[in-house]
Length: 321
Image (cartoon, rainbow, N blue to C red; front, side, top):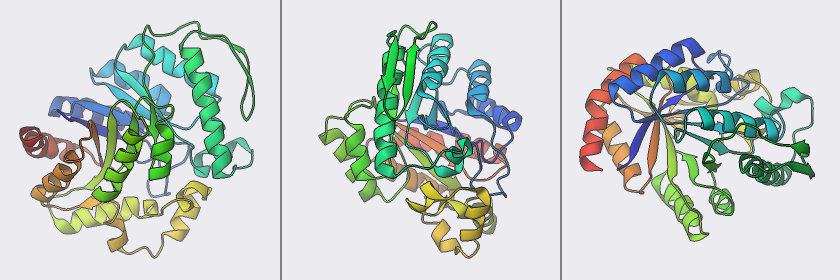
């Protein structure tokens, strides 16, 4: 049975309101939650960017939901610190936490003042970080000299079972590469043919564990409102790599998205006032055999979406999937 989660978007919502939203999502029937981890929003219109790791402790305490976070170790975060964060949450909330690891975006990582590496360097750096994090979670003392450096690090507080480390990918090639180290795969909604190719590439390369899918939606009682929400909040998020990886600031994203048409937004967000259409879109994703779908309503107001999808969308999906 596929798990249906609520995506907590720190770029868009104040952390106090986001905590209220995830508590409400649990009461409304969502099974799980996942969190972004950004230093900067994608647009000045989004206007927030709370620290995910502080929030995750509060959210895990306030709910009984399992949680995940998408993180980029190696530049903004030293991998030993991320291992400590993962280990502490895993020890406090056994079996309820996982972390997805990816290569990151310049908009978050440039703050250190270091140069933004080429993609191949970022990929190699991530693999080093994964090995450091795994060794620390296994209780080893770690020293490492490479693209990241570690000196005699050891985690003194660890869970009995290390939390899953999930591979984050948006391309077939990256999904295949993740199969070499990940405990599962996470990606974002795209045409089902592309998603199927990614999942097949991961599995064919020996990839193990669950497949997570984040799905961007925009719903409102009226079609014009659903379109307005998506356009106002998410038109800066329509750009494929490498553009979305390499732009530095929210202002840059706003500048390049000034003339983006609504049609381009609806290619990356499922926009409709018709709940039947949302059910149909989500059933297509279910047909891929994904293990968890995290629903991200791209608006800043979440309560109506949570109530409506909890009462009218999730029950229909559970009945069919």
